[in-house]
Length: 185
Image 1 (spheres, rainbow, N blue to C red):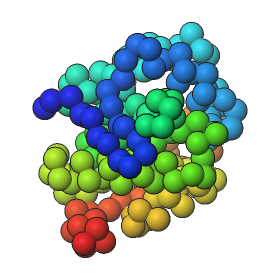
Image 2 (image 1 turned 45 degrees about the vertical axis):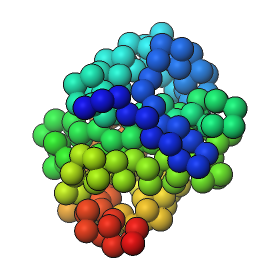
Image 3 (image 1 turned 135 degrees about the horizontal axis):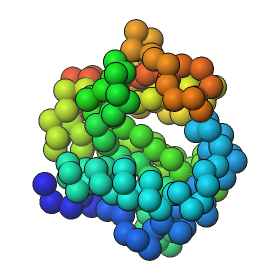
Image 4 (image 1 turned 120 degrees about the horizontal axis):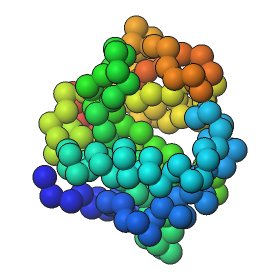
């Protein structure tokens, strides 16, 4: 699959570059952004984690949690995209998963929803995904609120105990292709 570049009215979802790593660390490895992800990570670990996971996914599959760039000023806002759920032994392992993480000064402006809509369109139209899941924790109201605004429904039967950093179980939302297509018509 060719390199993905997805444009929305205000955003570009694109492949990562080495130049994205430093601003990503600066703007997203903060207490507020990382609150539900176990807190800020040691900065020295982040470049290797990005390369080993997010950048690798694109190389292996042709899609990833893409860098989200604002068109107006080319600022890196964070990431959004599609991957294959890889929590080994979880009930969602192997399913298409949407995810996002945006810097705090981009919150509340509709960027996450705009990027998520483009990512779901990609999953259903380009990848042929039958359904897409999203993961969060109960306390992260903003995240599961967006999932609901996207038309996703709660799948409590798929909840699971996640990594040690998670405050409580990982909760799962899902949307099937037919539901996405119906609401986009």
